Length: 195
Ligand code: GTP
Ligand code: MG
Image (cartoon, rainbow, N blue to C red; front, side, top):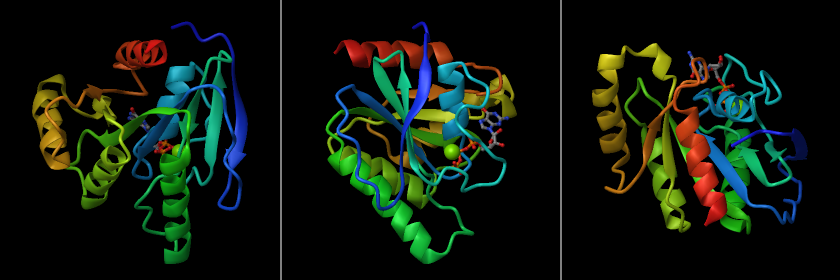
């Protein structure tokens, strides 16, 4: 895939109407701070178009990045941000839920899990919820640069088992720092768009 042009086209808050897009959408879900916005930057080949932060809870809106006028990468707010108050958390959850339930152009959801940690109950719920909506989530095990190469296979097994993922579920180890795994993500997006 060659990235020719990208732009942040639509930003949706809690009360916004979701856009009636014509182009296909690919969304990125996962816990706060897992690396969704960083992955989107890596895929778009931009340093910081999607805003990232070492503090969880950075992305609080649904952000649609138009890529090549061919498709959208959709950055979702993270779940499990402990510092947000309950009302805000519930609203973010509703916003993401509404998006996953109602977006007509959504082709696939990538669910990001930190490769160093066993998936949480929230991660499992998210995986099941995405499946329940009729999608086959692709799992991205993020921050693989934080592990030694030899630790990766076991960590991937922990992610798969912790999510109780179906046998056919694809899990791609990825690092936004080294860009490892990016080619696999490009190939997957290409095949999704061609389908
Ligand atoms: P929210 O918007 O809060 O939901 O977070 P997010 O999932 O968008 O995470 P974000 O991309 O903002 O990254 C969170 C932190 O993790 C930042 O400090 C990033 O620099 C760091 N980070 C993301 N991906 C990687 C990675 O692959 N390797 C390393 N070492 N750090 C990463
Ligand atoms: Mg973010």
